[in-house]
Amino acid sequence: MSDKILAAGSHDEFGESLVQKQQISHLISKTLNTKKFIAINTPLIERESVFEQYQPDNVFHLRDQIGGNLVLRPDLTLPIARFLASKAHQKDVQKFYYIGDVFRRTDYLSGEYNQETQAGIELIGDASFDAEIQALDIMLDFAQQFGIADVQVVISDTRLIDRVLATLNINNAQQDALKQAIESKNMTAFEKVRVTIEDFPENLQRWPLAFGEDGETVMWQLQDLPEFNDIVARWLKLADFVHKQYPDVAVTVDLAAASPQPYYTGTIIRGFVPSLGRYLFSGGRYDRLLENFQKNSLPAVGMGLNIDTIMAEWRHEAIDHQRIDPIVVVLAKGRVAEDTKPLLKAAGVDITPLEHPERKLIFDSPDGIYRFILVKPDDVVKYLDRGIGDVGIVGSDTIAEQIQNHYDVLNLQTGQAKFVLAALSDFNINDIERKRIATKYPKVASQYFSKRGEDVELVKLSGSVELGPLTGLSDAIIDITQTGHTLHENNLVIYDTVADVATHLLVRPGALLQFQTELKRLIENIMTLLSEKV
Image (cartoon, rainbow, N blue to C red; front, side, top):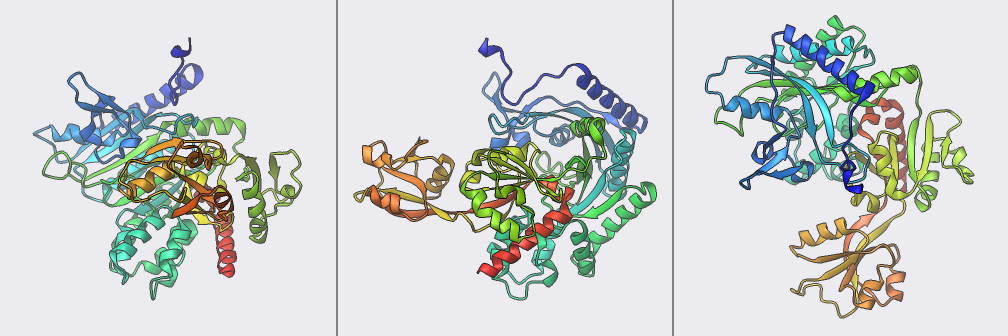
């Protein structure tokens, strides 16, 4: 019977939840049909070339009967671009809508679903800013129709970071490093580059955190820059529309947002539901929509509506819409927790319940702001990715072996160690023979040898990795060491340092908006404490 169970990441839908999804889909179709949108349904299976911009690891790959490469669609916009490119005669402006499932690979046994139902609209051929306003209007109208009052519009622009970076006196390597740090909200990486740049703008000192109220402050400071003022003008136009038509909806900006997909070219608009910590809708302008399918490009604005978020909001309301949830901090048990507690306390977090944990695993701070969950290190990221945890504190060695769906915000500079390549004294690191490497960290080891241009055989171990070279199981090991004493006692020599290891603070993306005031204060306080240690 074991071969009859569902594949990991899939699920059956039935009963009340399926009826709700059908009702949602019916209302969306009815509304958009009335607005003269054209319904379109593209195949679940597409040629791999349609999604060549996607990372191969994120999609499901198939083969057709003649050996062609296919994928389960991870996106519903690019198939529409493929459809449009096949039509010789196109109207100046076309309006499409879709409702369908997309498939994206998730971490095996993570508890995440591979399949998600989306609805969306595409305004094709409209280069005017009225298209953005029309698309946002439709999304906010749906929010009202589905009874979701707690929605916040977050505006950004895919051109902004590059434009502002271009005004700084920096080289290409600095520019690339800053952009990556800003988009990933990695304050440690950002600071490492920023301090090397003379006359770095004062108002951009905390650029990765420039969203919400802080983002608005920086926006007003930058609005007179020629490289920036046309973007601000569009944002203000959108905000003015929302304030007039939907006065109860808050509007804010994100000056550190990454482009959702490579084909985006301008304004990005997202609808965030703070009570859920997740997005209801997202989209924006992508005037390079048809670049991969035909010579001539075509302006377009699209918005996707997450049907699963609507259903989550209904379930949330049924429980208690007025409930105020604490910020959930998921702490790796053991040394990580012990080393981190003094830092959290100094940063203003009331950790009193953690001082005498006994056998408890869940603790609420006396002020009700934080809830702490103690778990094994390998489980920290899973709690964040499932939306149970908001902040994760765990070693970077654990993070390195898992899929990254969160912001790696700070290196807390505790639990410091190193990944090293070690072996017996007769090991030749430059030997051209294929090496056998024992490790608990196959992803780290694979990346290290890939950078060296070497193909090696990896042996995954769970116990004492040092035994590998001693017993002939492996030629060398990649492992963590703090002092090197254990390696020395086993006659192993360190041949290279692979990477630094330390405890990191992770934040679930939605939590940064959901708890932006408290989390920004926490991050700022910790950064101040870390700078005082230097």
